[in-house]
Length: 450
Image (cartoon, rainbow, N blue to C red):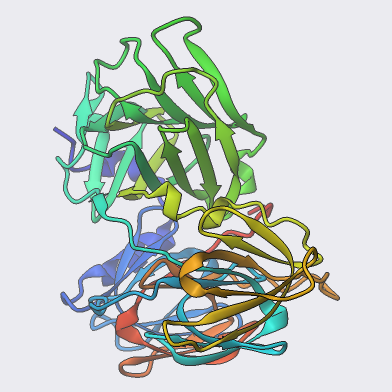
């Protein structure tokens, strides 16, 4: 059983957070604000200023509460996401933002598209990075943690774990695990936060054997030395390193890291994303992939180190229909078009025009005189020609998460009634339907330091 309180060990918490937690008593309809560490507030988020200050209205305070942007980790909105069909296309901008859309047309100046959240969009062609088509939502296998017993705490350190509003915390050592049915291809996501020095492992494709028994499985490891993914095997060499990254904990602002691992057991391939940025595709050199379906989180830290685990998701993944985030874009000086079958063309995407059975793509290949006409149903991905920016773009830490895995950074944001009015650094002023936005999240700058 997971313990429910570590309050005696948390006496060193920042006094400011202790005062803010007084306002955490809110109605069921209140937004949930997660701060750095494990402090949380409830209320209604009203705005984010140009300086990054978050304004919160709470029924427990006579005046709005103003929070520094670097203190806020995530805002989960109280409005339930609007049900309905999610667009099957995604447009990616040059700053990494992703917008779920339906394509209408494209010429040499702009892309015309429709978003169920933001309505009609005109996106200038120079800010387009890629267009991804034929995307279908993945079935959620598991999302949590949801309660103190959701993941099973194991061994003599079981009482070191505590649970509070979707966050598992531990000071010192301990392990939690869960048995699932994930299939041959799946996605694992989670967010970890820490104080002092993390010593953390995440096991996946795990047969759920006793903790110290040799097993066929993978594990993601994060320590003061960096990040590594290893393969453990019961035959031959026990441990084989698959991924090694010199990414130390002090490189991540706010002492938190979002991890996403995609596993295709049929081809023994792993894909790693850190804070939504792709780190690469990696081949498991061991011939037979592990067949287990379990997951486990392990902390090996000292008593003075705290680890927090939240936003755990396991999803089905159709690798054949979702190559978009791992495709090699090819020559960045030209447009590239990739067919559903995998054939690649370099050249220029002349236009996208409405057709009888959907949009038609007109593409001029470098190796053919006549342009190729291709229906949307045959196109997987388009990469747009990239030019070097005149200056390094300003980093905007706050982003809105949209239904359908969309993510848009905003420089300012306000929340009048059922709308969200935002200023986007590339698209200018945008208005969203609030029930199509799931959260506001502070992003880490890649390669940045606290």
